[in-house]
Image (tube, rainbow, N blue to C red; front, side, top):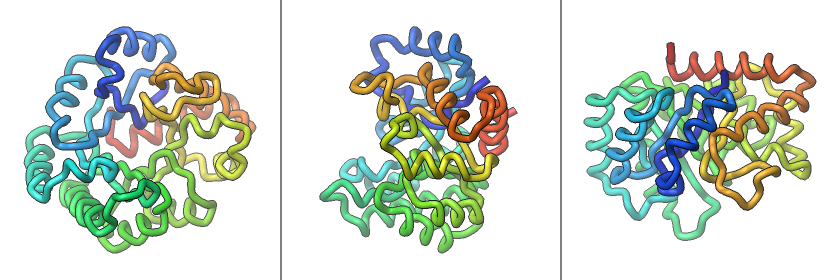
Amino acid sequence: MLVDSHSHFDAPEFDADRAAAHARALAAGVDIQIVPAVEAATWPKLKAVCAEFSGLHAAYGLHPMYLDAHRPAHLDDLRNWIERERPVAVGECGLDYFVEGLDHEAQQLFFDGQLRLARDFDLPVIVHARRAVDAVIASLRKVGGLRGVVHSFSGSAEQATQLHKLGFLLGIGGPVTFERANRLRGLVASIPLEQLLLETDSPDQPGVTHRGERNEPAYLPEVLEVVAGLRGMEPEAVAAATTANAKRLFRLS
């Protein structure tokens, strides 16, 4: 069994063949997907997709890259959704200092608000941190009482250690399959196994084998093989450990 800890399986890219993509994921041993939201308008569709297909677990949140679509009232709406729907996590949320034109103060307002909701409901938080890992760490410390995952982690070993001390795991996906990703591959080889989650970030961030294609959860075993090789472990052992990590973080039975 494998857990895809970050899959946007509700995305329009899957509308034409979602059932077939789900069947391919199951055939590849990917039995569970965590499906994070990006904006309030997509929450109903995400809920419906997770209800239709086995092994899909919803998270609700407001992604920093969709900042133009967010309104302060959406934080109140999110509280109501969490109370009613009982998702496995809050997210995807976070900070993105890479994309130009995304106001840092506005991002921070929505990020802090979602962190407080995660703390209030005792839910893990799924964090996006691009060129903003230090700012994310500062936010996590400021709010306190949190746990979660920084998905598609691309920071330093020191930042990984700080996040581990804060109770945060690291999501590793397609980028690790590229041989030129030397820092990331070195990090994946050395971080504590209990801090590691596997992800695809479907339909984005395909691995080297599917470069230029739509990514999908069925490709997660390729990430597994690379991670296992970097750590000098059998893939089955990495699969068992990362599945246990995901079940523990998201409180899955």
